[in-house]
Length: 151
Image (tube, rainbow, N blue to C red; front, side, top):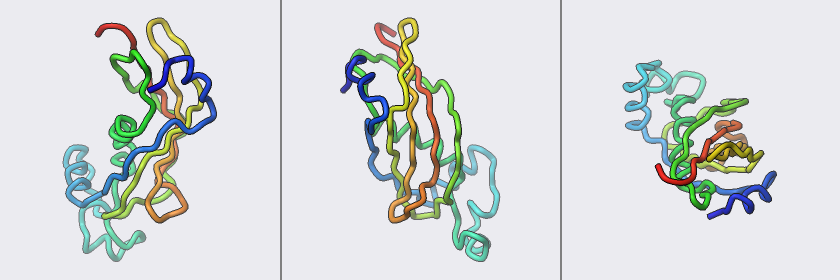
């Protein structure tokens, strides 16, 4: 748990790491159904096996959407925060495919802190690594707005 002042002193430093999240086919299929993105590389194991990735892969946006769970699991918690909301993302890059069965986790480095009226914006440099691989699944600069006081 960080105070606002302590958090501001952490700019440029690691402020958290999530647990590993396994990317099972049922998770990929559920995401495909919700987003209506049924491209074969995600849902057809037989056809994907002969494609460029050798297996089905997670949607890039599925991996990106797991950031909320990763942040709740291992990201910085701020004393007095009652709510946080996504404010935006900068520089999103999908660097490596996440094959079915892989495990991913988020690493959070504090890029900046900006004070707002009754709020605080944190800008996190996030790297989502794939277990056993040197190249990450994605990197993103993520802005979260944190609110304090009563909801």
